[in-house]
Length: 195
Image (cartoon, rainbow, N blue to C red; front, side, top):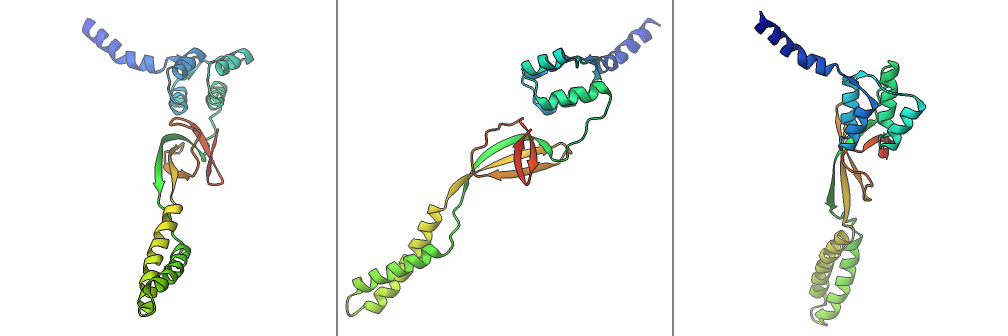
């Protein structure tokens, strides 16, 4: 009989721990521990809410570094209203700098061919003007094409975002992003904006 009682207690213990109420201090501890907003929100949604949503409690959360997104979720859970899903919101999972190859428009090749043809004609002399012009134009065209491609090279940043609906999206940005992995963002007109 004693063994069955001990076994029943051991089985019930994880369920009791899972149903433990969550307080403002728990949220502050998670944020100060470096957990992302997405992880904190997931924990809030899974716990029994026992939050202090008084003005003092909310100010203390904010002063402790808790983001507005997390505070909004706390308010929604404490009031018992389901949190409104944001179909355009997500969390940055990775940022990667990549080299963007230059795209030639043909202008460099044409300009290079003209200059190369003129130089080739002059270097070919009286007897080889046609051959010099052709060789110069071909060489100048190739050089102009390569110079234009090199001039148009650049860098871009690839930003991977895990959307709140569970999908993953990738965005490209020509300037260095001011965010890092774990930052909550919203898609506005096809571009990322902070929440």
